[in-house]
Image (cartoon, rainbow, N blue to C red; front, side):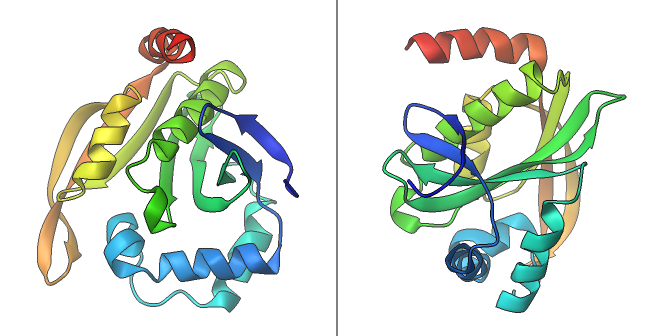
Amino acid sequence: MDRIIFRTGKKSALFTLEDKEEDIRKAAKWLNDYEGVSRFIGLVGPQSIIAEREWFARVHKDKENQVFGIATLEGKFIGMMGLHQINLHHRTAVTGAFIGEKEYRSGGYGTDAKMQLLHYAFTELNLFKVCSSVLSGNGRSLAYLKKTGYVVEGVKKGQVFRSNKRMDQVMLAVFKPEFMKLWRRYRNS
């Protein structure tokens, strides 16, 4: 694999994002996939390659955000995942992710990558709580977050306007003590 691997799991690897043109183009393509990605992650309107190139350049310099590529163990770039709004004083962060390659959705790759990311967040960054949110209707993301230890903290009714209708935003969080128990079971399974 021609990438700098950050963490390796059972099905996937997290790698550091570089300014590789092929990765930038692939990410822009995924972010313009309305049915599979953009309608679930809050993007409005098209995402240009120029904008994505600028984002890739900025993300490396931002200490409050750490974003990684998700690859199969064979090295195929299939998605992205990150920790955002990292607050080391309060020991909190927000996470987001997507699997851009359709054939790898619902195959356990996101779950495996999220487990690696959360283990890093709780053991190396010493975070206590990692938050996420899911739009109503995104059952696949809700299921995988629950599988990785997240619990629903609340619902923001009608928070997002998408596809010509109002959608609820489900707020979730995972806490270090509960995750570490789940991690031990996951690693031994």
